[in-house]
Image 1 (cartoon, rainbow, N blue to C red):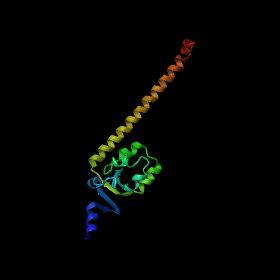
Image 2: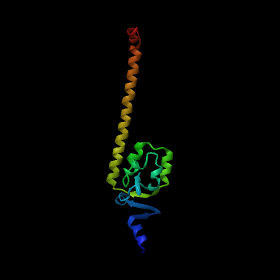
Image 3: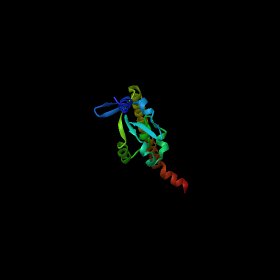
Image 4: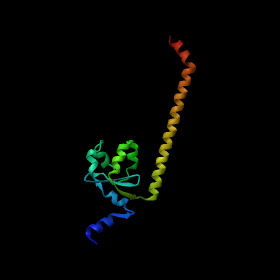
Length: 144
């Protein structure tokens, strides 16, 4: 086996033509000259994209070598950004199932709390509208 073949097999396992990278391997690629990310359990080598990123390379480098799913989703990337990301996919990440479950639970809790906030805001708007509807005429007369 040649040195380059040994290096590649040490770096990733290939399953059905998809490279599987261990989280520890991705963590090594955490610089501006060698920048990998994990997003939704996929591994991306975004090194060549850093200078083209609208937010600048620093934003990506802050999460280089890590699971950046939460940061990517929180930013609200467009479909175009998601399509660009696909060009840089190099494989799948082999993540600790406990970490994946914890992140999913955190994301679900965050989305449900956002839903609760919406309900509270909608209720407050309706309450204020009702108060103005009931007392609006009286307020107009007092202000005259």
